[in-house]
Amino acid sequence: MEREAVSKGRDKDTGENIFPPLELVRFTIPRRVYTNTHMEYITESIVRLYEKRDTIPGLKMVFEPKHLRFFQARFEQLAF
Image (cartoon, rainbow, N blue to C red; front, top):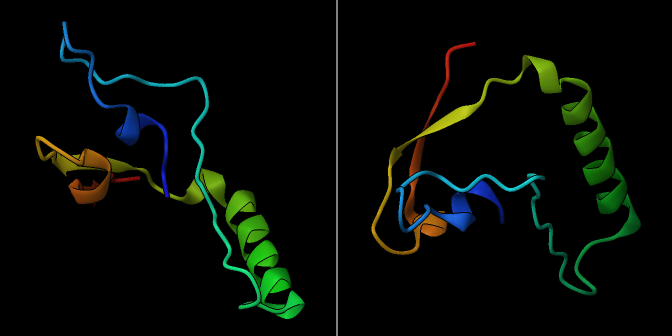
C-alpha cells in the first residue's frame, strides 16, 4: 500500500499536493502463509523492478475522490 504522496493529500490552504521527502510502499506479509521460496521470488522480483526503474513510466492521477483518496483514486500511465 502506498503511504506517501497520494495518502498525504493536499494542503488545506493552497490545494497543492503534499509531497513527502520519501516515497514508501508498505508490504505486509501474513504469518504462516508464505514459504521461504515465495519470499525469495518476491525479493528477486523487487530487485528486477529496481534495476528497471528508469524504464518504467510513472502514473498521473485522473480521478481524485473527496474522501479516501488513497483507496479510490484512479491513475493513467504517463507517456515515456
